[in-house]
Image (tube, helix red, strand yellow):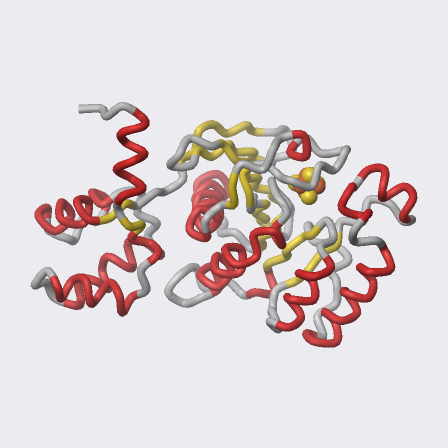
Length: 275
Ligand code: SF4
């Protein structure tokens, strides 16, 4: 029976998202229901390595166990709503979140790379004048597992369409990644970990419109991924016009933050992130 949308949403919110559990926590849960710890490892692999979209996908767990999991947890995976194919091979997908928001992710194939461009927020609060997302309100931050899902789904698309795996990820979709700092870093942590996708952080680039405080925070956190700066104009006058964030984060303040980031990480800004 299909539940009315609001009832469905309340049910989703009342249960815990299984993807927020660490492996030790999942093992603890399996023990608490009298099951074997290794079942937790199987479920964890389904969640992160095999990208299960629901509990029924977990085919090596018994039907009773899958039922119990679905009674106690949610698995709020992103779904592909629609995909557009461009003549140059680019695939643009609209993804639907568990609570009905739409976000975009793009697969950009070149001769040497298969790059996923992913979103970090639903909408954006920075209102850059040249950007369609900038005319939408920021509805909410994406959760870390929703960011991870975009990468997993774009990886599936490149495998199916081009027979190749993703090689690179750029955070240049909807939203300002540094204003969803914790979830973006948690997603990258999972994408680069061996129990996730095992990608090198050097193949990941986070692009910012210029949030100086959080650029410094990246330096303090000694991140190993790349940082790109979307400048769009080379002086404050023009930048103020098209990027309102420049009024509180002007070019000099950004240069100082980027120098600090470099001092802390020794990571240089990439000159070309797509080729
Ligand atoms: S920060 Fe990025 S997503 Fe947000 S309005 Fe500016 S260009 Fe668009």
